[in-house]
Length: 119
Image 1 (tube, rainbow, N blue to C red):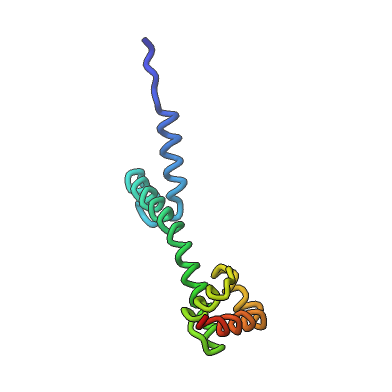
Image 2 (cartoon, rainbow, N blue to C red):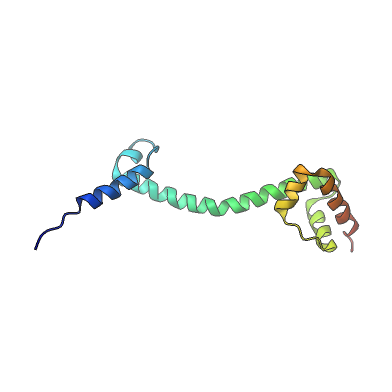
């Protein structure tokens, strides 16, 4: 039986790992074992951070809404409670965008929330 060597495939996989490790410092971009470990950890971190990004954006939107609603003498929690009592279904992303780009429209929502706060 003829022996099949795997040098082509192993060189290809090594090249793939080292290409992903390009830009890392020291041995992490040069040596295969260190590069492989670093690429593995980087992949795990990027997966985690893709999940964290969603909550980071939500925190940003909430802080923007809070800042804008406090300018109209209303706390964030009371603002959201007033909107819920009024039956207004607007997500936080849109509310934050309104707070930044359309202050007049946001003021109307704040007034509606104030009106329906105790309802």
